[in-house]
Length: 246
Ligand SMILES: Nc1ncnc2c1ncn2[C@@H]1O[C@H](COP(=O)(O)OP(=O)(O)OP(=O)(O)O)[C@@H](O)[C@H]1O
Image (tube, rainbow, N blue to C red; front, top):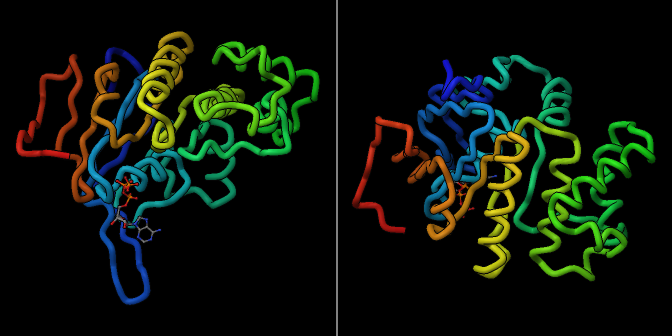
């Protein structure tokens, strides 16, 4: 299966996710089918509690599904051990979080170098790669700054540079603009879009914010644990639900 000739990267088939909280059973995802191909730029949007983070966690191999199948690069993730899943995740996926998650005592450059150093890459190589990524997000002149000296938008740009430094096939950004004002939220969305088209990195990001969707080629709308709309310009098959109001 291909989308514009690009190979399949992640495939979810009839995926369900149930959380158990004491006596209660919470169905977070119900029968989700989704294919994401290399190079796509995908926004997952929908109201609070609709399952966006749960979906991102499954696509990012941070969690496993309760039913159905998740395949990453053709591999059935459910058949992997925890260690194998972590190894695949570390190699192939970068993460951006809404709270930036930078290490306060490290400079911007050291924060971006960290994933490579954890992977055993030499300091000199890690520094070169981190500088290149900081330049891509427009922060090469801020490499010595610690996070507290940077604005929220700048911190998120450092976090994006860090997510990209290992050359992952996929970047998952769970509500990356939730803690930013609307101007910075738009800038971060445009930056991710540019990195997607320049580098071919696949991006999946979740958002509450309908205004950010204009620049996104594929929009997946969730409600009550289901995908109720999956639309993109080159897709003929649209399942629109006009009754949805966020
Ligand atoms: N670790 C958990 N334990 C129990 N229930 C959970 C857990 N994580 C999520 N849920 C529940 O699963 C459902 C989907 O939550 P999820 O966080 O995926 O939605 P969301 O669309 O990302 O929401 P938000 O926009 O508020 O982050 C909700 O009912 C939520 O309360």
